[in-house]
Structure formats: structure tokens, C-alpha cells
Length: 287
Image (cartoon, rainbow, N blue to C red; front, side, top):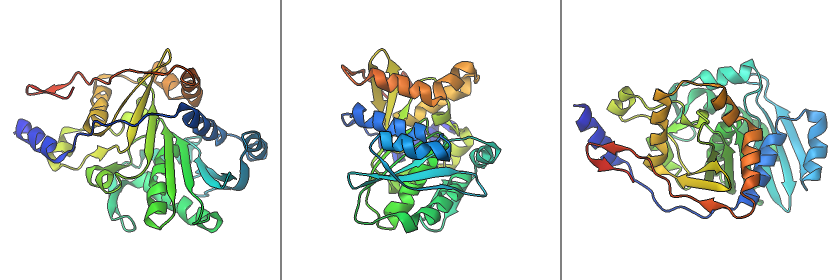
């Protein structure tokens, strides 16, 4: 029976294999902006100015304690959303249930969805519909950035780029399919387990309703090397979570400083390594 469910599961999932070339100069720019989200409000304006950005608005959402900023540079609007920084943020992370969203007509991670909707309502008065929008964030901030991008795109705003770092999953297969045109790059490190959660479970496969990533996944390997994947190959990285015990190594791999160090190595002579899952299902290899 489980074999039958697996085969049915694969039959409804498209396997994407075409990968876009990556601009690591732009990725570093967005990584620095994601890192800026952790700054105190009195330091943020100056730091953004040093990066050629003008702070337009900064806000802290009361209930979730999610913090974000809106900046502009060269007629591009950038939204940076802070990752987990307090107990309230952690409660958002832990609200894992997939629930229908009335605006998007898809299912969303309940905690991330509610937090993103609050940011959406808060930021709309400060946005312009005639200027492109870039979004970025680390961890929780990345998850909220993706859902916020969905809300903005759904409302007619010109979302041109979403780059996240260590971002967990936010929706299911149907939601990912509906927003597959979202210009999303998910940057991860091999030992960061946050992008692998919530993990795939047999029960979810049985119901064909599992958490599912979208966009291109760029995996920073170190030593000026990277690899990338998407679709089902990206999702099956999550199976490794079930056989690993979270450790200090995983925590270090999730830190924004680790991401910045690895991205800095890729500014010159970046070498792409073919991605391999080394996974077989009943004689069917994904490589």
C-alpha cells in the first residue's frame, strides 16, 4: 500500500531540472539586507544608507513581534523581514498546521500566514505599485517574505525578486504549484535543518497534502562551490532530517553570519557542482 501511495505521489509531482545561473553579487546584497533586519531601529537607518538604501518605513507588529523594514534605492522597493528573535517569534514558528487562506485560496503554515498577513496590511500604505519590489529575509523572516510576496503579487504589486536564507516551508504542493512563477531563490547550507522543516511524514504522503518548497534552491557548499536543485529533489532533502539529531553544528549552519561567509567566497570563481540526491525509490533513481 505504501509503495502504491509513493508511486501516486510521484505521478502528480513535476520534476524540474532546469536551473538558472546565479548572481552571487545580488545574493550577497540581499544577504546583507537580511542581516540588517536584526539591527536596532536606531542603527538601521545609517546601515542602510551605507548600502545605498533609503529607509522608508520600519515597523514592529505588536502580536507576533515580527519586525520588518521598507527601503528604496534606484526606484526599487526592498522589504526585509527579521528572523526569529524572541518568544513571540518562536510561537509563530511552532504554529505548524496547514490552514486555508481566504485571500490566496491555498493552504498556508498557520503561524507564518497570520504573521505575513499582518505585515501585508501594515506595509501597503507605504508601497508604490509603479516600482518593482524585492523581498528578503532569514529563517522566519524568509518564510514571511515568501507569503508576503504571494499577497503582494495577488494584489497586483510588481514582485520582481524574492531571495531568502535558511527559510522553512510555508505551503503545500497545491500552493507551491499555484505560485510557481514567484521569482524565488532559496539560499541554504547543507547542515541547516530549518529549510527541511516541517519534515515529510508518511501520513502526509497518504493524504497527498505535504509541506512543499517552491523556487530554486541554492546550496552553499564552501570552498567557492555551490549546487542547486528544485522540485521533488529539493523536497527530498527533508528526509535527511528524520535521521539526524539537531546539534550545535546545525545551529551554526543556520546563522546569518555563516551564510554571509559562504556567499562572500562565491563572489569570484564560483564553481557549480551537479546536485545528487543519492535516493532511489523501488529502483527509480532521482539522479
